[in-house]
Amino acid sequence: MNPTMKKKKETFLIRFAKNIIKALRLRQVRLYGHKFSKKTYTLHQHIVLLALREYHKGMGFRRFCELLPDYSLLLEYIGLSQIPHFTTLHKVSNRLKSSVVEGILLGFARKARFRAGIDSTGMSLQHSTYYYEKRLEHFRKAKKKKPGRPKKRRKKKHQYTSIFADLDKMLILSTKLLRGKKSDNKMMIPTINKAKELFNQIISNDADRGYDAEYNHEYNNEVMNVEDQIKLKNKDVPVRKTKGANRKMAKTKARKKRGRPRKNHRNKVETIMFVLKKVFGEHITATKAKGQRQQGRFRMIAFNAYRKLSLLFIEHFYATENLRFSRNLCLENAHIFSRINLLETFSFQGIS
Image (cartoon, rainbow, N blue to C red; front, side):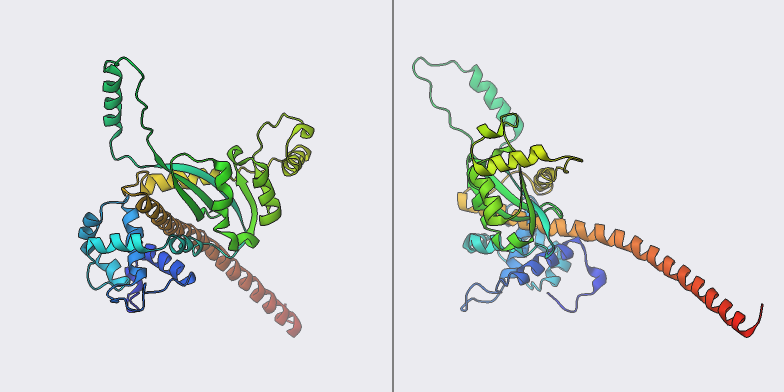
């Protein structure tokens, strides 16, 4: 970061980069990958650029590097004197360890206690348009079937994306990325384990009915020590016929609860996924499985930096209103106290 940068020049992308650099410093990500590195660029600069590429919906490395000269203020802020070759970013993306990149997500976490939740979605690996797919399906159906056993159709794969998030501030804490269909039940523990250093800050863990398994309820109660808010399947089945001690306990607790129902915080995970796909795109442009997973991780880093910007705007807006109100209140109180003191002085001197 350039220390001579004036505050008035802080644009959206500079604040975006500032959030990422702050998370990198909190996670103590080193500046260079090796002690014999050429030291032309730092890892912090590369990670900011790779996250910025995901903000542009994962455009090609060559096209992205052609756009970089237009971002002169951002390049000045991160201290980048020359534009890297597009293959440099591609090689850095493949070289970085997945544990290092996923650890950056924890740098966005807050120190306060919060509600957490988990859910999964799918990212498209296809590059064809919807119309092209429909036309192919039309011609496939119109084609005459040959006699004999029909050929097995190749299933279209997608990237299974499991997300564990802070529901209060809507920040992604950890993720599990795999190719093809997976069971939500079996993916909960591997996803949440990546954020185990935050277990003492979590109040509750929300999940939908897809995660309703005895070992997941047991993990919430005994490992995480949080409120078990996993939705139950077959609510009408009696407790005595429900399998698993933790599932029985959750069902009994739900039936005994009275009063106002709890707010459905789990829906906030759906909001995170909607924004992730709407702002950063639902298509993964990488061709190899390793590159696809790495692209998904950088997309979530970009989402957290974007979300931090939104939170900063909201907090600043409401804080400004509160400060204005408190300032007016203090002025009124000072005026009242000054009048009281004046009256006391006059009464003491016998002046009416």
